[in-house]
Length: 343
Ligand code: FA5
Image (cartoon, rainbow, N blue to C red):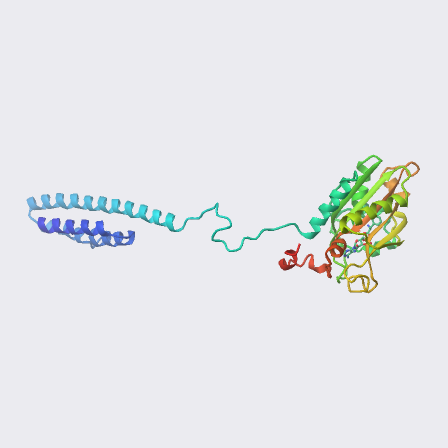
């Protein structure tokens, strides 16, 4: 029996050394040391041996069992290390890898065309001494309408229908709300612009969105006149289009300015021939403006007998459309990456 045990041991050790996977080791462990394993059977049969032999064979069996267990453990450690090294070699990732490399196409993002032009406008106005203001997109009725000389009963509210929250606030319909907040905070003289996103309950077409961008502008000083207003508007358009553009100024009604104007630009999509963007009129409404109404100055705690000002509300989407010849406002929010890649 001693010889049989030693052969079993030698055989087991040789298989352990050759085992290539942890699974193979486990199968071997079950075959030799499991409940019905070869060595377990020997230990079970000890009772049939004479006393002397039983002690010697029992001792030997236990020694060999311990040696096999430790050989299994050692081999398992070696195989685990090999497996980890293999994974490291095969599955590694070079986090410093950029083009040129295995990546065929490396996409770089860029600013949306509306942001690009907004930043250009901010540069133009800051170079002329204007400060940039911000305001909340969810506004109160007071800042969006009331302080702009549009009381609750005023029909001008109908032109700017919007989305209301359950607590009586609204998604601002124009950036003019920013000028009211600005007047409360600043002491005249001052010059500010307020770019931002605005919302309206609107029928969508080639030149109307329900979510679009405006840039508000306001200058309050002594003896501000329409001449100042036209100077700043012309400077803005010249800087943006890098060429003379044909504009027209016509009377326009906004309760917060008096007199009020609509500044239209000759449609650059169709060259004035008529298209869906200019509604076949050859002109695009771009820049309503006017001299600030005395009531609005009073709401902003500014004395209209001492100070006067102009204000404008530029339609940013339409300006970008004119600059790049974009023939439908819906492209801006379409999320179509082929559109965005062009800018
Ligand atoms: C206003 O929003 C006034 N707050 C502008 C203003 C400010 C007048 C200061 C006087 C003094 P209006 O609703 O016309 O005005 O909008 C201004 C510009 O936003 C329009 O000329 C147009 O270019 C753009 N706009 C208006 N509605 C839409 C729309 N649904 N989609 C895209 N652009 C629009």
